[in-house]
Amino acid sequence: MAKTAGKNTEKLTVFFDGACPTCVRDRDNFQKLSGEDNNVCWVDITGKEDTLNALGIDPRKALTELHVQDEQGNICSEIDAYRLLMARATLLRPIGWLIGLPVIRPLVSRLYRWWVHRRLTREGRI
Image 1 (cartoon, rainbow, N blue to C red):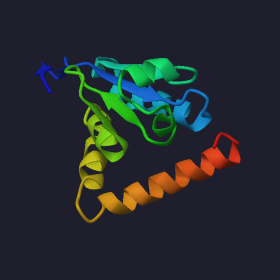
Image 2 (image 1 turned 180 degrees about the horizontal axis):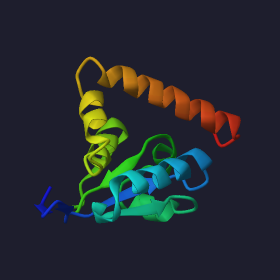
Image 3 (image 1 turned 90 degrees about the vertical axis):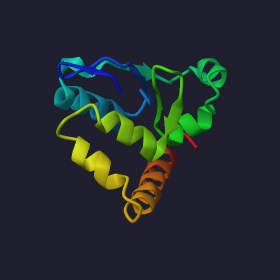
Image 4 (image 1 turned 90 degrees about the horizontal axis):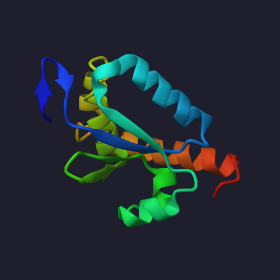
Protein backbone atom coordinates (compact mmCIF):
# COMPACT_ATOMS: atom_id res chain seq x y z
CA MET A 1 0.00 0.00 0.00
CA ALA A 2 1.64 3.22 -1.15
CA LYS A 3 1.77 6.09 1.33
CA THR A 4 2.85 9.68 0.97
CA ALA A 5 3.38 11.82 4.06
CA GLY A 6 0.98 9.67 6.09
CA LYS A 7 -1.68 9.77 3.38
CA ASN A 8 -3.05 6.57 1.83
CA THR A 9 -2.67 6.98 -1.91
CA GLU A 10 -3.95 3.56 -2.93
CA LYS A 11 -7.70 3.62 -3.33
CA LEU A 12 -9.89 0.99 -1.66
CA THR A 13 -13.46 0.34 -2.70
CA VAL A 14 -15.66 -1.08 0.05
CA PHE A 15 -18.90 -2.79 -0.90
CA PHE A 16 -21.30 -2.46 2.02
CA ASP A 17 -24.97 -3.15 2.76
CA GLY A 18 -26.58 0.29 2.75
CA ALA A 19 -29.92 -1.24 3.79
CA CYS A 20 -28.34 -2.27 7.10
CA PRO A 21 -28.43 0.51 9.73
CA THR A 22 -25.57 -1.13 11.63
CA CYS A 23 -23.44 -1.29 8.48
CA VAL A 24 -24.10 2.38 7.72
CA ARG A 25 -23.22 3.29 11.32
CA ASP A 26 -20.02 1.22 11.09
CA ARG A 27 -19.09 3.06 7.87
CA ASP A 28 -19.71 6.44 9.53
CA ASN A 29 -17.63 5.44 12.56
CA PHE A 30 -14.80 4.24 10.33
CA GLN A 31 -14.79 7.54 8.46
CA LYS A 32 -14.59 9.45 11.74
CA LEU A 33 -11.72 7.29 13.01
CA SER A 34 -9.73 7.29 9.79
CA GLY A 35 -9.99 10.96 8.89
CA GLU A 36 -10.18 12.46 5.44
CA ASP A 37 -6.98 10.95 4.02
CA ASN A 38 -8.14 7.33 3.98
CA ASN A 39 -8.84 7.21 0.19
CA VAL A 40 -11.77 4.80 0.67
CA CYS A 41 -14.74 4.75 -1.69
CA TRP A 42 -17.91 3.28 -0.18
CA VAL A 43 -20.36 1.56 -2.56
CA ASP A 44 -23.84 0.61 -1.38
CA ILE A 45 -24.60 -2.83 -2.84
CA THR A 46 -28.37 -2.43 -2.54
CA GLY A 47 -29.85 -3.20 -5.96
CA LYS A 48 -26.39 -3.55 -7.55
CA GLU A 49 -26.48 -7.25 -8.42
CA ASP A 50 -25.29 -6.65 -12.01
CA THR A 51 -22.34 -4.57 -10.84
CA LEU A 52 -21.37 -7.18 -8.26
CA ASN A 53 -21.67 -10.03 -10.77
CA ALA A 54 -19.50 -8.09 -13.26
CA LEU A 55 -16.81 -7.87 -10.57
CA GLY A 56 -17.07 -11.58 -9.79
CA ILE A 57 -18.77 -11.02 -6.45
CA ASP A 58 -21.76 -13.23 -5.66
CA PRO A 59 -24.52 -10.78 -4.59
CA ARG A 60 -25.66 -13.12 -1.80
CA LYS A 61 -22.11 -13.36 -0.46
CA ALA A 62 -21.85 -9.57 -0.68
CA LEU A 63 -24.73 -9.44 1.81
CA THR A 64 -23.12 -11.89 4.20
CA GLU A 65 -19.44 -10.86 3.91
CA LEU A 66 -17.73 -7.50 3.59
CA HIS A 67 -15.91 -7.18 0.25
CA VAL A 68 -13.08 -4.75 -0.51
CA GLN A 69 -11.38 -4.09 -3.85
CA ASP A 70 -7.89 -2.62 -4.00
CA GLU A 71 -6.57 -0.34 -6.72
CA GLN A 72 -5.21 -3.30 -8.71
CA GLY A 73 -8.69 -4.85 -8.82
CA ASN A 74 -8.00 -7.59 -6.27
CA ILE A 75 -11.05 -8.39 -4.17
CA CYS A 76 -10.88 -9.79 -0.67
CA SER A 77 -13.71 -10.62 1.67
CA GLU A 78 -14.69 -11.20 5.28
CA ILE A 79 -11.75 -10.99 7.73
CA ASP A 80 -9.20 -10.16 5.01
CA ALA A 81 -11.42 -7.27 3.90
CA TYR A 82 -11.74 -5.98 7.45
CA ARG A 83 -7.98 -6.19 7.98
CA LEU A 84 -7.29 -4.24 4.80
CA LEU A 85 -9.83 -1.60 5.76
CA MET A 86 -8.66 -1.35 9.38
CA ALA A 87 -5.12 -0.71 8.18
CA ARG A 88 -6.42 2.70 7.00
CA ALA A 89 -7.29 3.89 10.52
CA THR A 90 -4.46 4.23 13.03
CA LEU A 91 -6.71 3.37 15.98
CA LEU A 92 -8.04 0.25 14.23
CA ARG A 93 -4.71 -1.14 13.00
CA PRO A 94 -4.05 -3.13 16.20
CA ILE A 95 -7.50 -4.72 15.95
CA GLY A 96 -6.85 -5.61 12.31
CA TRP A 97 -3.59 -7.25 13.33
CA LEU A 98 -5.25 -9.09 16.22
CA ILE A 99 -8.08 -10.58 14.16
CA GLY A 100 -5.51 -11.91 11.71
CA LEU A 101 -3.78 -14.07 14.31
CA PRO A 102 -4.17 -17.79 13.54
CA VAL A 103 -5.89 -18.56 16.86
CA ILE A 104 -8.21 -15.53 16.78
CA ARG A 105 -9.11 -15.43 13.08
CA PRO A 106 -11.35 -18.53 12.91
CA LEU A 107 -13.19 -17.52 16.07
CA VAL A 108 -13.85 -13.99 14.82
CA SER A 109 -14.89 -15.36 11.43
CA ARG A 110 -17.38 -17.77 12.99
CA LEU A 111 -18.80 -15.06 15.25
CA TYR A 112 -19.06 -12.63 12.32
CA ARG A 113 -20.92 -15.15 10.11
CA TRP A 114 -23.30 -16.02 12.96
CA TRP A 115 -24.05 -12.34 13.68
CA VAL A 116 -24.67 -11.48 10.00
CA HIS A 117 -26.90 -14.52 9.47
CA ARG A 118 -28.90 -13.63 12.58
CA ARG A 119 -29.29 -10.01 11.45
CA LEU A 120 -30.38 -10.91 7.92
CA THR A 121 -32.81 -13.54 9.23
CA ARG A 122 -34.36 -11.04 11.66
CA GLU A 123 -34.74 -8.55 8.82
CA GLY A 124 -36.33 -11.22 6.59
CA ARG A 125 -33.63 -10.76 3.95
CA ILE A 126 -32.50 -14.40 3.81
